[in-house]
Amino acid sequence: MNNRQHTILAILLAAALLFSAGVARAARIKDIADLEGVRYNQLLGYGLVIGLNGTGDDIKKAVFTKQAMINMIKRLGLSITPDVFRRMKTDNVAAVMVTAELPPFARPGSKIDVMVSSMGDATSLSGGTLLMTPLKGADGKTYAVAQGPLAVGAIAFGGKAAKVQKNFPTAGRIADGALVERSVGYHLPPSGDLLYQLRNTDFTTAAHMAEAINRRFGPNTAHSIDSGSVKVLMPQDYKNDLVTFISDLENIDVQVDVPARIVVNERTGTIVMGKDVRISKVAVSHGNLNLIISESTVISQPNPLAAGQTVTAPQTTVEAVEDEGNLVVLDMGVSINEIAKALNAIGATPRDLIAIFQAIKAAGALQGELIIL
Image (cartoon, rainbow, N blue to C red; front, side):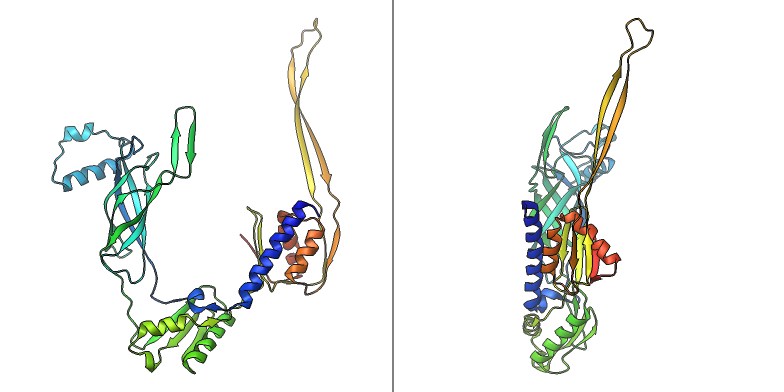
C-alpha cells in the first residue's frame, strides 16, 4: 500500500471506531434531549464603535453612521448646527450590529458575551470600543445592555498596491460585554408534565428513553409521543423539588440508536459512515480519467521578400489517460471495516469513494441512507 491508501484506510477505520464506540456506550438524557422551554434566546442591537485609528466608516457614504453619531450627541445634551452637520468628517467611528445569546435562567446583573460586526465600509474594528448598546429580543423588549473594548483577533495592513490580512478584522467579541437587565423565566406547566425533545429524532431512541425513565422512577412516569418527544410526569416525591428531579432524570443513561447512514461532503471530500451501514453483494470497478491539456503559441513568420505579416496562433493539445480499474466484490452484509479494506484495495481516493457510494446507492445495494452535503 502507498501512503495515500494508508490514509484512506485510517480515515474510514477511525470513523468505524468512532461510531461503534458511540453506539456501545449509552448517553445521558442531557446529552441527547432538551427540556421544552429551557433554551437560549437571540438578542440584537445597533450601536457605534469609536476609537478606531482611521479604519472606521466613511460617513459621506455611510449615512446611517452619521445619523447615529448625531443622535448620540443629542442624547448627551449637545446641539449641532446645520453648518456643523454638513462639515462633519471623521473616520474613527463605525456602525455595528451587536448580537448575543441570552442563556436560560440568566438573572439581572449577570454578564454574557457579545459579538460585534461592522455594517458599513469600515476596514477594521481593532482597538475600538463599543458604546452603550441596548440588546432587544424578538418581542422588542430590552434584555441586556452591551458596552466595552473589542477583542478582534485579526490584523489588516496595506497600502495602495498590496495588503496583508489575517482573519476578519471587521468583527470582534467582547467577553462578558453585556449586562443582563431582564430575565426569561421557566414556569412548570400546571399539569406537572415535562416535555423533552430529542436533538436527533428517532423512534427507537425515544422508546429507549421512556423505558429508562420508567425503570428509574416507576411505571407510567414517561411515554414517548413521537420520534422526537418524550413526555414525563413528575412523581409525587419530587413535587416540591423540581431541580433535583430534573438533575436525576437528565443523568439517566439511554441506549441511543444510530441509523445506517453515510454522509459525504463533495466540496471537501469528507466521508462519515455509520456503524450499521451494510451493502448487498455487489462488484465495484472504478478507474480514473485524467485529462492533460497543454497550450502553446505558434508563430508564423513569412519570407523576408513576401508581403505577409507575422502572426501568432494558439495551439492546444489534449491527452486523455485512463487508469486501469480493478474489480472488487463486496459480499452481502459486509461491515464498515470490510468496506474500507475492499475500497482501499482498488486505490480509491476520498473523492472516488463519493462516486462509488453514489453508484452503489443507485444500484440498490446500499442498505442505508446516503446524504450528500
